[in-house]
Structures are given as structure tokens and as C-alpha cells.
Image 1 (cartoon, helix red, strand yellow):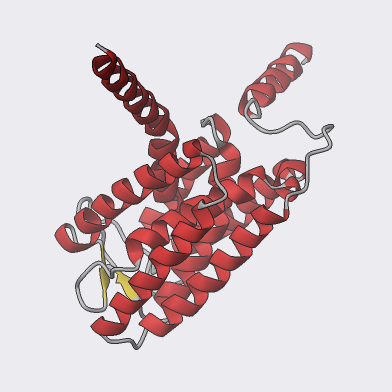
Image 2 (cartoon, rainbow, N blue to C red; image 1 turned 30 degrees about the vertical axis):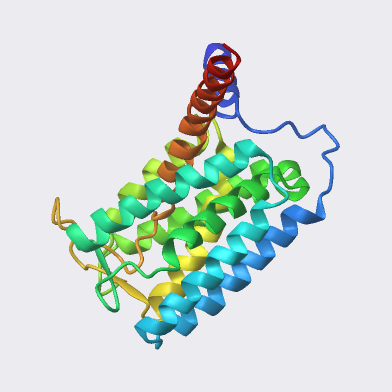
Length: 265
């Protein structure tokens, strides 16, 4: 029994290895809450508008979104800015593959609206802002439990046979999300991503801005509208952005040093 308890404590320590400590007085930054609140508001307004908007209005929303993203990045360091650049590039490529090519979900006009790429940048920045906010850092474990319970119930509902449109994909993705949450290196960013992504997916599908296919095109699994564990896809975006941005910055620094050296010769 003692050995089992020791193993349980050790496993728990490993699972929470990347979670923030609770005995630290983390700083309060209004900027983090402004970024999150502003993005949550913009997401709701833009997706509701696009539910009945014309292609021309989509383009206007795209211009506005780029302006907003640029403004939000003014106060960020170069590391976060590069992460946003990588997130936008990777997510945009993913949108064209998953939506236009695979038809896993479809926007109203069968396109990728022009506000989507900068929107991904704002969503990623919001996940980062929430991850470093005092509220999230102080309540990380409570938030993780609430997400696991709420998301778990949503996933179980999707595969229970009760709803008209099943959600095997959502249940699978939610399992991936939970693994990322406890095994990944940036659980706070994943937590932040869960909230903003769930928010935008519920509003976007409810407004008719896009619709997920009832049958997933690769394995023919049932798929909710939206899938319950859709935040797992955004965890992939976050992981790519966090992992590749230092390498890109390092490469740019080496190129800059080489250029300066070549000029001095």
C-alpha cells in the first residue's frame, strides 16, 4: 500500500511538473486581461457578423483584424511576436488543408475568410496572455480540473448516442488535449487555448459561419459541430509556435551577425 501511494505521488508530481507553483505571488498585469477580454469580444462580434455577411464584408473584417493584431503585438517582446508569426503561418496552412482540401469543416463561401489568419494570431496571443496572467497562474490546478470535468462530460455526451450528431472525433481529440495538458511543456497556454477556442467554436458554429462535417473524412468517425475536443488542434498550433520560434530567431540572429561581419571586411 505504501509503495502504491509513493508511486501515485510520484506520478502526480511528474504530471504537474510544468504547472506553476501555488506559493508564489505572481504579478498582476492589466495588459493580459485586456488582450483576453478584447479578443473574446472581437471573436464574438466578428463571427456573428460573418454569419450573414458578404464576401466584401469578410475582407473588411480581415483588414480590421490585421490592424488589431498589429496593435496588440506592439507591447510584446520579439519572442512572443515570432511565436504569433509562426502560429499564423501554420494555422493558415492548416485551415486550407483541413477545410478546403479535406472538407472536415466548411466556411459559408467555401473559402478561408481573410480575417481568419490574423484571428489565429489574436487567439494564440490570448492563450499566451491568459497563461501568464496572475489569475491563471494562481488557479492553474482548479482551472485544469474544471476543464477536464466540463470537457469530459461534453465528450461523453457526444458518444452517448443521445445527440443526433455523434462526436467520436471530439472524444478522441479531448483525450489528446488531456495528455498535452499534463505531459506538454506549456500546459498554461493549452488551458488558455481551451477557453478561447471553445468560445470561438461555439459562437462560430451557432452563427453558421462554418459547419463541421458530420462524418470525419479520414476514418469516417462521427464528428460534432463543433467537436468537443477541438482545442487539441490549437494545442498543436501552440506547440509548433513555441517550439519553432526560438530556432527561427536564432537563425535570423546568425544571419544578421554574418551580414555585419561581411560588411566589416
